Image (cartoon, rainbow, N blue to C red):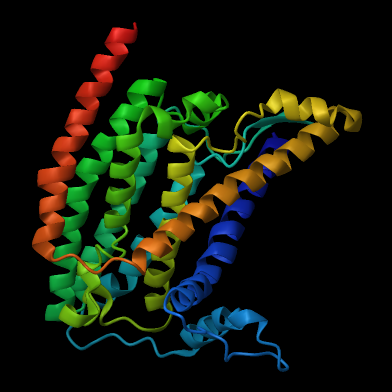
Length: 358
């Protein structure tokens, strides 16, 4: 019992360390540097420690220090309790979704099977959607409680956009569930050990629609109408500063990691290497013994999984710095008149193909 508790605690600390401790701060640097490269600029390079700039990496530390020392300002007439709670409501679901996201398979370590997922739920994919949708309340409450017209307008845009694209995003996943016959993310990942059964081959249209809907859910360019600076100042977090603003900022980057992880598991083979099964890898390292071989394969699989996650983070950053912002009516039209009918068609075609093959 104690051993199981320690293993679970280690997995929780690892996920929090990777998402909050590594990806959240490092992505602030990545966004600056990648945009600079794409625009033929140098990017962040001024912050230094003893003359060393480390390619601008110290800017992430400078940002954290600035947010810690900034005044926590609550505007006059605002609801103080809800104004304080809303960034917490926004950031917690982004972290909590990783409870069911597997970052590796099952390995035999020291005579015990270790499953690299915090909670292996039968309805893991449903859990992701359920928890992720809670963040909407944080954004809507933030705009309403700020007593600011621009913030309220941003929160209204957030609500309508996220509700619109949640419908489509849910339907794009139905095809994946029909193909794999499971909502357990570990099982979906395990099935894709066979390269020919990767989700991108079985559900190519589903992948494109899911990625589009997920980016819209995260309110990143070209879907950033809820915080459009040129229209509504900064939308729902206009009246936020310091750590509260930092929590909204951090939740957006953590959601990028979540999107990349879900796309990797559903469509790109999870932690598997094309044409290399787990049994093949174990046979290569059998000289190290059962535990040694499993440990090395586990490290390889975790590395492969996060390499794929980093690739999709890069893709989202590229889209963010390539496309212009859509108009609000264009976003609604894309969601309701294009993606929704396409997702329903995808479900119909998937069902027909499954019936024909069986």
